[in-house]
Amino acid sequence: MADRTAKVTWSGSLIEGGGRIESVGSGAFGPLDVTWDSRAEDSNGRTSPEELIAAAHASCFSMALSHGLAQAGTPADRLDTSATVTFVPGTGITKIALTVRGAVPGVDAASFAEAAQAAKEGCPVSKALAAVPEITLDAALS
Amino acid sequence: MPRIVREADIAWEGTLSRGAGVVRATSSGAFDLPVTIASRVAEPEGKTSPEELLAAAHATCFVTSLAGELAKAGTPPEHLSVHCTITMDEVEAIGHRIVSSALSARGTAPGADAASFAQAAEAADAGCPFSALIKASATVTVEATLEGGS
Image (cartoon, rainbow over all chains, first blue to last red):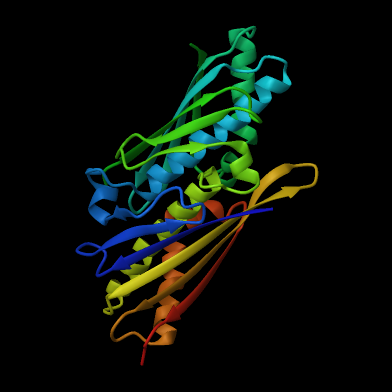
């Protein structure tokens, strides 16, 4: 069992106030400032829940794909994944688009696409976010 | 309402057990962080993980919702502090699953009492898009404490 933690503070109202991701359990990042404007308008260098979700999903997917390829006897040299999260205020998170380019010796395009599809379905973050209306995958060898 | 798009990238090299990745906040440039499988499932050793990023996302999503709900109730907050713990467990025959997200909120909001603060926290959980999503597959708990309230 793995517990992971984060602590966030907020001062003032939603629109005029602002928050800060003070720290995370690992100590890997923080403090990082967050504001409503930077979440809903231009980021201006500040992260947001949706960007953190994109980072979580891209990294979870990459680990699952790396594992799947190695199990199939064709370990990856390198995987480049991006996740794009679309958020509509008032509606919610409507879409996550995953794109992966892989350098994988000995694998053909069809097997790579199959492994990527399995990673998209099986990684723990995909399962946690299965209620997102649309999760797309674009997988190709580089 | 306009669509808001946020993007992150990761470059992963090597196998799962021996390889490593660097995850980057592409939209904002706010972070650039190493990840490994060992630091994800065992001791973090200073490295983040998908679950820690989700904990940060959920705490941030919830705190903004709570600030909004308190303002809506006419008792805008002075200061709020939210702690989020995401738990990943190994479920038999399924493998690793994110099983819960526990939120704990404390704060000061002049004019609010314990009951109205708890009500705002409940509404914040209902309104936070991340809570709505993760509830389909995991347990979300919310604990709210008003500090120095009347």
